[in-house]
Image 1 (cartoon, rainbow, N blue to C red):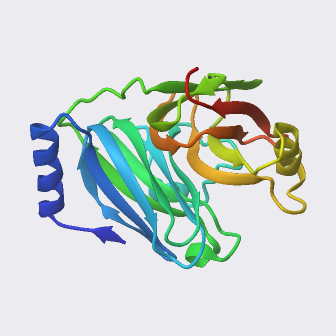
Image 2 (image 1 turned 135 degrees about the vertical axis):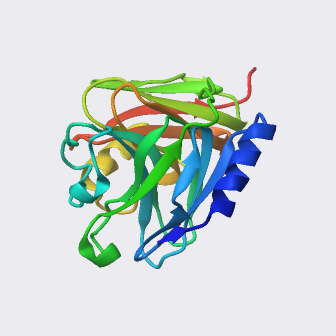
Length: 256
């Protein structure tokens, strides 16, 4: 499903031309697919994702080589290596109905697609949904540095030990082999980082974690920025992808 018409593209072109802020693209997930534009300008882009369906969905942005087509990759899944010529640029990770989030990416001209590969509850007929998105050369924009950088490494997570509470932009970078994503959890009162890591391995019993935000998988060398608002407390960073999850503690506290 797509919001079609030249008026959508014209509005995005005008917004990118007159403002230093990122252009905003709204994507709604429904149980049959996505409601989103067919074409957007290149440059710094904020994707606002909202789950309007009855089941969990996520939005992963893919970029294709010039000779690739989304139609030929209907069975693509982030649970296995991506085909040659396909990169995962991140996006908004799993959200329940009426949930959503914003991610910032710097779009390059070329063929892209929006992917939801969640099928456990029969989403979009039990098959991954891929919707083409054409990015037109128009407005170049660099991805901002972010207030803090989180690196997803092959053998761990690189991140600050402490962040100040409040609104900030988290820049997530992938270093290593294969796509990986990030989920930020807050620890429930009285629970430890060891409790959280153990629960992520088994998913047994009541979770000691409260999900705060998630960034969909990124291919090596790619980055995105996730706006966040973090209250003071203890958090757990979780790099998604491997069977044995990589985790790292994070403290959010006011400077002394």
